[in-house]
Image (tube, rainbow, N blue to C red; front, side, top):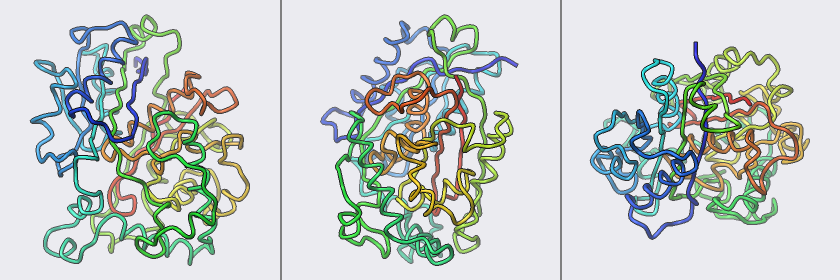
Length: 378
């Protein structure tokens, strides 16, 4: 079977843009094509990652997103979850029908309601939604369970925000970047106890474009292609009350991705990880479930410094979702950032070692209901 490569990536800043959504989207797509020396006509297929439920202020993404991507009269498809849009693009190439696919994820968070009211639509309209449940409410319950079951402290959770916002200082595309202390995080406003404001991802604008190519075409487009090595995804029960919020489906998704990539010891074999952590404590929980440390050991993992830029396995050198949260696009941002690390093109937030294998993770839904893991290799 032929291989699929990422040849080029482009991304916008997460800060609020004054451009229209169409111009905002066009600029990033034009940039990625210029990097590859291609025109719109040279791209075989277009895949969009965008959402309908009022992100960017829209209730029908298909009615507006396509023009800015350059998908007019092109074969295309769309996925609500941007890691899915990436794998859709890869499958189009693996089918043998296309040798190039442009995958773009986009949102203008500045033009939609706050994320919490939007995520309330995840709940069914008869039982859950009338209670006022949203993603942050479930995350607060999940954080409380996590701390009580494993004796993880609030200060250890706060360290994730300190690390990631500090990393974001070196990422020109980051939305929220500031040097903060554990005390700053602990004293920030309580959103839903025990979640604090600096432990919750912001609402960001963002467009990210990834150009995929078949093996033969990739070697003509770039000197350093980044190969898809493994992929896994898994979905948990719809109702959060029907599941243990600390025993999700990420281990299953990771197992599938690791098996495909031939990875037996992720902590030793991976060089960097971009993990989707809309809430600070979730980075610790996801690192456990990805096999970076033992169950319940996330607090000790962050204390050890293993996930810092200079640690044994740097996690979120870009600043992660805590720094930049273009909601539907955040999974593809993780994939793009992992690819940049392998290419050695991450700029000031490039980790200080050669990156051969990288992990990119995406999650959506209450308490990590939907989990995707992508393994990239040099």
